[in-house]
Image (cartoon, rainbow, N blue to C red):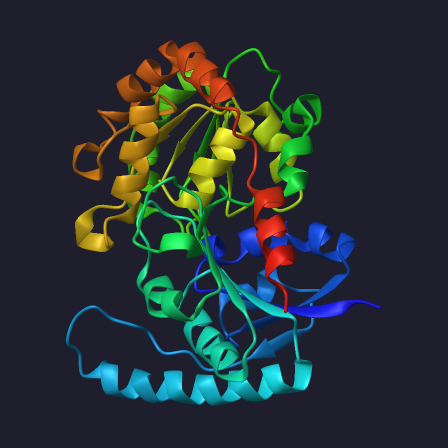
Length: 351
């Protein structure tokens, strides 16, 4: 008979897809997953097919705002809703991937004596995980960086969907309608898109497509209707099942430096040019992720302040020139995926 486990996390794909990477392994270990998220969050779409339970979640801010009071009551209502759901489900464990929705769920689990395991993808922990850390049984880390968690911390790496590791290059080229005569450059801005990257790419497409086949995932609502598909350029809002084969056809990537993305590139040994979100638009996590991967020799970094249509082509050329060296460093790391490591922590932590 299968036991129940609750997965939670949301707000962006980065707080959801690592949960989905665990599903096959959970089933093999006799654990049936339910998902707790918000009603209108991206997690509801991504977790389609799982039993889904909605709660309220308030935004957690590091600064004073008149909305803090309103969101405090949302968190409190979410806590009460999560507590009722957990009482009804009586899960063996809660696995939380971060994002605001995870906080009331972990707090409710602690109140009910249900163990919780957290996963932190980034170089430095996000606010949601910091608020949940004291109530967690274990905290899985993607980066080997101490955060004062003591024996709770386990360096696991980041879960990567197995399907992404089994793509077929020829099928990817066929889907993209590319011949394979030019290197394939994959451009990704994350699930929410990346306006700065999109604009820089649009400003130098002729230069890029002269040397490379360009696959551009622009993000939902960010398609450029003025750009008809050129011979060496393909644009999509996002890719679903086709992404694995497109990854297999990819020679290098231009991307934000979200933890999920950089660990997927590492698992697939895809050299990348990372354009991290600046401090003006983030807490600095992508800057830290990018600096770590650059120091390890897995990626090049171009700061957003230096990003432009003029700067991008030579930066891509430099990445391509360094491709073999970067690929060798990633292969030598021995890092494939943290999925099995995280599953081990979960199975050892179930009550």
